Amino acid sequence: MKILFKLIGVVFFLVIIYLVINHQPNKTYQWNLPEHFPEPLIPLDNPMSQAKVELGRHLFYDMNLSVNKTKSCASCHLQEKAFTDGLPRALGATGQLHPRGSMSLANIAYVASLNWADPLTETLEHQLLVPLFAEEPVEMGMSGREQEIINYLSKQPIYSTLFKKAFSNQGISIHSVSQALASFQRSLISGNAAYDRYLLGDDTAMSSKALKGMNLFFSEKVECFHCHGGFNFSDSSSHATEQLKLKPFHNNGLYNLDANGAYPELNQGVFSITQNTEDMGHFKAPSLRNIELTAPYMHDGSIVSLDEVLDHYSAGGRNIVNGKNQGDGSASPLKNKFIKGFDLSQQEREELLAFLESLTDEEFVKNPSHANPWIELN
Image (cartoon, rainbow, N blue to C red):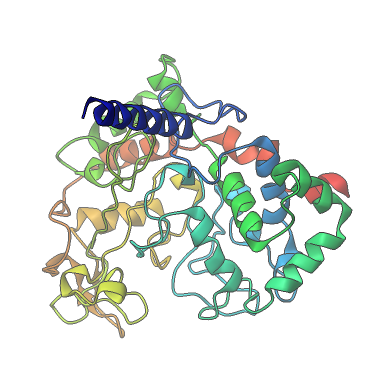
């Protein structure tokens, strides 16, 4: 019996050692994270490396990965717009209009739910297969053309070099493509806005107006921080020091077509997956970092400016008085309990807007390591 217990103890010890080794932060990649940022949670089967990030950057900007060579990942995620595209709703390579807008990729490494209304897709490696191969709606339009992608990449000397550096002699595959693209996207860390510099001790980084707006933002008066809290200003959160992934979705009173909280067809939020009435109109609260650069707003781009966003929330929901989407969102029985409406003076509105503008990271949108490498080569 003593021998058995000793064997069990040895096995347990070895298991602990294995888990510790396999959960160690990757030492081959330098994050250079802001002091107030935790380390991202990285899949064990796709550790970060600079070689993967650089390969992923080339793939991200390569239009040859679309069916008609007119679109790259970057076409819908422009660096100067904090990796959004400025359109109300995204356009695929074949011109098909999407029901939702392109989300920002800033700090995507920290996001627990990667789409507007899909709680099932949890990794970038999985998510990016959708834009590459989805048929409804078409994005890159490469469904059934997997071998065509591999053949193209295999014939390019630059990719032969980049894949070998990133994956040694594993060869080129859709799996390695997805891992490299995911690694590049995880490298898109934004944390040097005026707000961040203020947090780290620069008392001059934010104007007095923005500081007053910050106090408003985090107050019970406007309730913004409940859905847009934490270092990334979103309650969809995942990182190495967090015990649980947080994947909340919310109805913010944007629509109420039938007085029962209904949203337009094709844009009904998590309900489209669960068919649970309580999930109608539930969408992710995106990060507010760089929000000044990512207009138009909401999942369908139906609100043009930040000033109009304040109108929406101060009214406790949007009241559409004409057209097919007519209905009073403020009266929706399904909207989030924190969207109650509030009164702001003109000065308070200006202060709140000044705070939101203080979340813009100019360094991030100009960082050459995130930029198009093919321009550098031409």
